[in-house]
Length: 221
Image 1 (cartoon, rainbow, N blue to C red):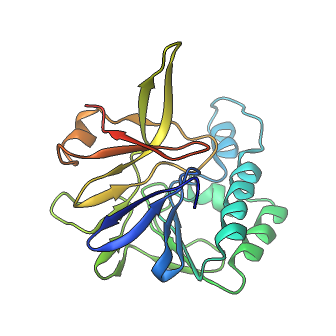
Image 2: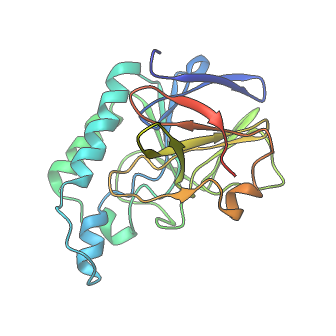
């Protein structure tokens, strides 16, 4: 677990991985958020930027690397797994087969997000949220809850070095919740200093920057 940052939430030992995935060793559970598969197709369909249509393959390749490394019993995709429902329906057969291979032999759960509100025609279970006491997995954080694992905001944070400022996707972690970074290749991010994130996270919250090594720092406010 050389690239990961271990921490506890609701008494459970978790690891924020440098890739942006979350690992729950006791449950052999891998969680990723905001894959946004099919984003280039959705942007082109709606008259937006024409991006190289390779982000789905790149995202699945990185997800496969984590699955190969940890061999999880369960995988939770924490919402906005697809850029919209049409993007899910339009996935090329190669990517559909790839997802089926990743699902084989393990429990796979799609959590509903605001971009993909409802089941898609792929394997696995589809849920609004998943309680696994003492933790609950949902797409958007509920300020009234604790022991919560969510995504949605695509948090990122910046760190200054001697030569430049580096901005990376990050986990936000405090005693109540963890908010995962977006795992998808073409996803943007919201700075941790944004009011929406400042109001959710305690003063002592950490930002755990992704990269070759997960790096914790006080959450920039």
